[in-house]
Length: 388
Image: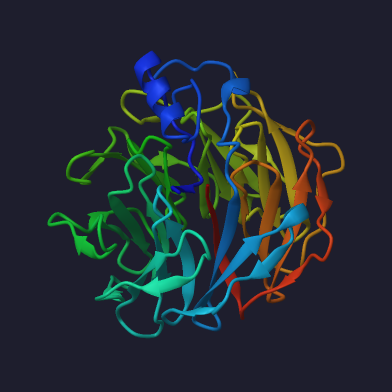
């Protein structure tokens, strides 16, 4: 049984396509960040996934809640949940194989934060703390991401030191070793980060300087190199970002200008070019974004609810879904879509998790029976993974 993190695979030729199928990974045929654009309808996640889990970092209660996704998209806590983390647990990342989870702990007002590391039981979803965890981090680490191509590296943005820390993952134990060249400089007050599906590029919205830093990732060392022309202009206080499953488009939320910056990603250099029609207007102040694994839909949260959009597969332009915005809990925080693109989950300031079924044709949302589901105190970062 092989666990799978939410990642769209890339098969560049018939041989690789066969390898993907043999591995029962995510398939088939469209490259995520490198090559031909292909048809969006060819993006599929693994239909053989037998179980899914949702992980939520709880800032107020310093722990991580883990839920199993049951029939109809409902959530039920796994045995032992929540699991202890550091103070101010704000973000969670899972490696592409679903073996390890990493949580950023701000530890505010302490001068340094930390990263809590866990081994994941693929059957039960139970978390076990990795030996040596937590790992000391920079000042106020706010977001964490694992490279989706090989699951070899962890990246963390630090708000007060304006940088990105990078770690190598021990593939046997899940322990972390900081790269020699780490940390790497970013703009003012970086809050989140996004890695393209093949792990070639990393993007960091800088809230204070109103721009986006772009980096290439060395696939061997994990080292970051600033893309020529970086940072790229954004709206006011950009604070969340997501790359579409093909690695063609980047979307960034701008809360104080009430819109979304959309960019085309250069497939060779990683440079960003604004999409036609960008920025896209969203009501209120969008604070988080998630894309479904087919690349058809984009979802944004703000004080008014959840705004849903269809994504034009050729231009990347956003068109609002009929009925949007859809109501969520009070102070909706972060959101994620499950591996099969069937459900959307939102962490709320009301200490619970809202769940919605996604209409596969329109992208419209319908509340899952029993939603919202009880969470920890101050649920924030949220991620999903599954296994066969």
